[in-house]
Image 1 (cartoon, rainbow, N blue to C red):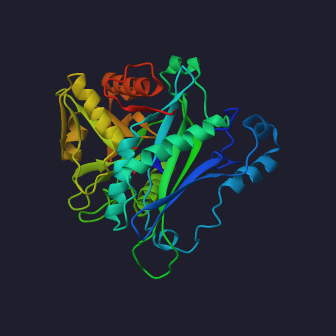
Image 2: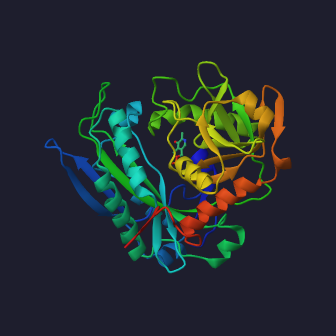
Length: 381
Ligand SMILES: *Cc1c(COP(=O)(O)O)cnc(C)c1O
């Protein structure tokens, strides 16, 4: 999935053991369940662990078994509306290590609000944003207390944090037991954290190609961060990756004329007029928090920025830079787009000036080297 292909999961030593440990989740997790009286019963759960150093010293098999044992909630039902019918939604956000040894989380209130909207969109009781933020902060804090958190490394500054690590936090909803088609009326919300390092390979191709597959249809669930939306993008992305592309670009379902999104990221184009454009938020476009933040940053830099329908023909003729945004992608440049056999290459395939500036500013705010004038970062304390 687009969100993840940008990244490798890292171990305490920072080596890539993704093949062995698909998901090295931190020991402290969180769950809450909706009650019939409208309240939520919350619980922090400490899963099996040793110290990070002891875990790093274990044999790969023993370590895999220990870490694998954390990925288990025997009290949650296997057969339910989420596992059977994709009736569930999720969030993704990150906590960034700071030079002073603390961690700060990027805009968790926005993720909390979107999670509530997604749950409402799936007609289930919404988990309130005012529970979301303290739960995320407390889970990250508890893990950091045990040593499960990346520490700031000044060498990350040399490549503008392209190699920086962070804590990826994954909250998701999970339905009660059931096998008939039904809505969830008594969902859980579960949260887990895991360390991620950015994938950094300056020579990696970032070529994109339009796909005929349809990610979202008008009147559908494209605007909801729900599990069901990721099947088609994953198929499309794998298909284009086999042909040497990094990203699939989805066009609108009706006319196949307008750009909508990457496989799991929003998309921007700098036009030769100097205007930055991004597809407006139809019900087929996911309202990305990085998308919104990049619009704010561009406007503050004095760049004229438009949210509107963006014809693929206009992009092929007039775009001079292109990038995608998302929690995993950050701001990632796209070097070229192929559409119906034609290819447009942006800035000779190099990272464009505006793309680079926006990427550096956003990462700088997140890692604390650029002043957070918008008040986006929430300290873990
Ligand atoms: C999560 C997601 C994004 C990016 O959202 P952010 O809040 O910026 O991480 C964009 N498109 C899709 C389809 C997504 O699922």
